[in-house]
Image (cartoon, rainbow, N blue to C red; front, side):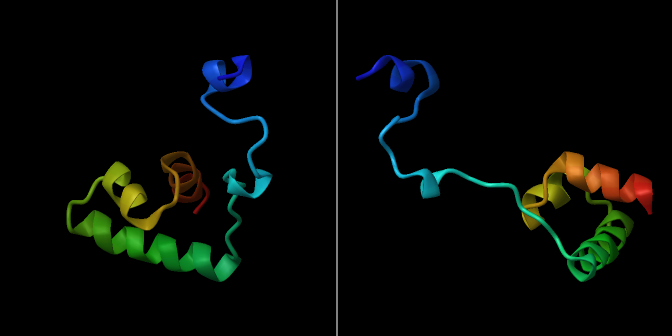
Length: 68
């Protein structure tokens, strides 16, 4: 086990495609997610639970709600 793998838990020689990249959402996807959030909020669902269910990070969801 190399030092990098020990410290960061990654293999320096691993395929780079395995790393998770940044996800972008189209305007339509964002609008759909926000509409679904409004329904979920009315049902008493928390932002944290909704973000876990949809795969959108909590921070992104919070930002979108704030901007809308």
